Length: 188
Image 1 (tube, rainbow, N blue to C red):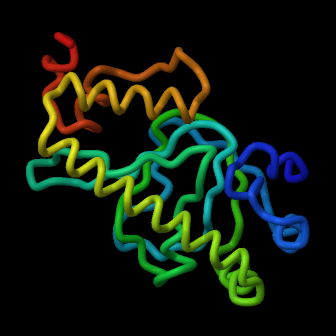
Image 2 (image 1 turned 60 degrees about the horizontal axis):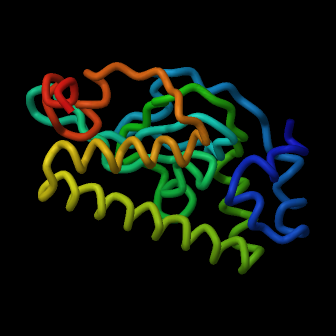
């Protein structure tokens, strides 16, 4: 599967041949299991995940035990990029929303290759910025849009990442992700 990783993940697909070949020997394939917590706030980040399929949610835990999603990562990006670009400590929780498969790579290996390869470093920076913009958009959407619009946006993003019109999620989980009550999602 490592040889197929390039065709299944957008970040890997956008690398030039030399940059990809520098990473390929270090890529390992892992299963992403629904509800699996990949990282918790405060954890030391040891690996990045480059999904081929499935969806990973970055979630913030609120005071009353509530959770809300701030961003989604799928086949278009990479999880734990902050461990490469910023520091070793996780600043958000990451939970597998929908099962799938990912390539994983040691953070230190990616950091070393990024330091040696300017195009890779630039690409990682762009992915980090895109994730930041996604989190800003999600916060703005959650603060200003009614449940119908938040749900529509969320479902479209999941559909884009899964390339499927069918996915198994509970209304309770969807409601948590968009910062709404379950009965609001049921009504919509």
